[in-house]
Amino acid sequence: MFIIWNGLGFIVIPVVIVGAVLAGAIGEVFPNDRWFQLLAVLGTAGALLGIGVLLNRPKIVGQDRFGNAIRSTEDHSLYWIPVQYWSAIVLLIGTVVVFKR
Image (cartoon, rainbow, N blue to C red):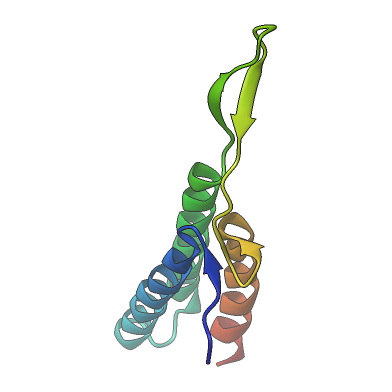
């Protein structure tokens, strides 16, 4: 399987792995309470949202001759999906997995 990313988009993979391990560990401790696992899913989605917004924000790189700010945006994405949008994907899939069990 090929992994395609731009910039620091590969950071999605370790964050999701840590969130899945955390949700699994919580599931072992509290097997009948799915809400605790859902907290791990929410934490993972929140972390991805924060990282994505921080990485993909526009940065001021200079000024033109009229004094207007010149902004530059970097592309941090995994499979052409920006990091902050992966939070919605993780939230959706994680919720389905938690409540399907």
